[in-house]
Image 1 (spheres, rainbow, N blue to C red):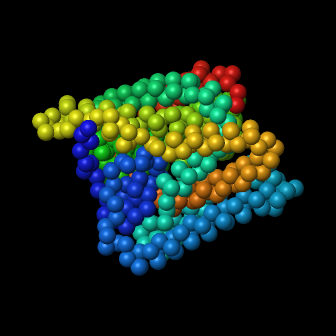
Image 2 (cartoon, rainbow, N blue to C red):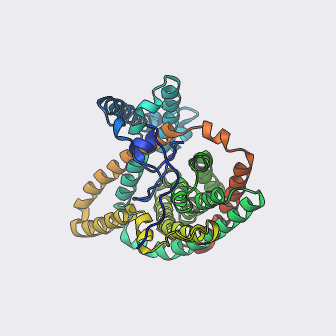
Image 3 (cartoon, rainbow, N blue to C red):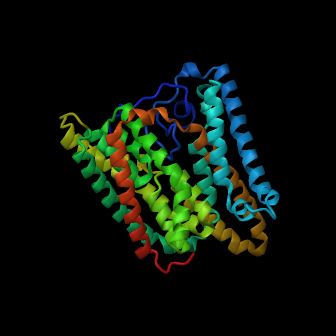
Length: 406
């Protein structure tokens, strides 16, 4: 079957997207791109020199060093704060907060010293977050996935449809270019930058439009990591409702995982299932956009028609690893009994390390310059759509996950 046309988005810089993640635009924001999405070109061969690998090795040392410092602070700050006025606060701060803040601090240092572009190939957010999420699947009992699948699918279908149509309509009212409308609507309704990249390939968006959208996603996602768990606590939401709200509202998988970790282990499980469900629908939206732009917007007689092969190509295949890990862990714990818990503890610790690496990379990848170039209209549209998503996701989560227990 014919595949969608090659997107017009290209990145030839030696940044994280060009050399490492293949899922981020020139803004180098954290994303979770489905495997096979050809929105960003691979690095040029002339970058694969000895110097390139030396700088990448240095960058990896930076990431690993910040991750080790994150784990050190997570384990020792509560001990240092015992008996002080900040004891409760220190005990509540978990690794996502330390990792992101240290990543942002590291971002400032490597930017000021001019090292950022040289070492950015080591900021492998996609690999770290997907590996962490697959390992997260091992901590989720298969029965939880089975029981949560129904409401998660219902929420994903209703939320994506409602938020996408609202954003598309509002962006049209603001007179935005149709390709930028597609990127913004996909990003805010599905899963952030990864959805924007898939949409960029479908509608042949310009590189600058993808950069704008990616910057907006991360600018709104980072505060949500801390805001939504706090609001869930203020509103007295159950773990299941809080997790479904977080998973359905925050626009990147990495940020969802960070917020879910702050909200609690049960909330994290539901948030991950809801987010994975939305990610799985990304391919459907990408194929629909491919067909719409090819047949109605561009109206080129030689435009190829999308087929089932395109849907599979855009499908986030790490989802299969997530489910497989859950199946294997569920079987293993049932077979091994109490002895299996020690093994699962090792897997959980490994998962935390990969997620820490992902969150550190998020902080290291943030760019502010591209956001300044976006102008006020895309920012206004994205902000309004985010608020709409926030309210609609809360309503759906409250109805669909009411009384649900993990």
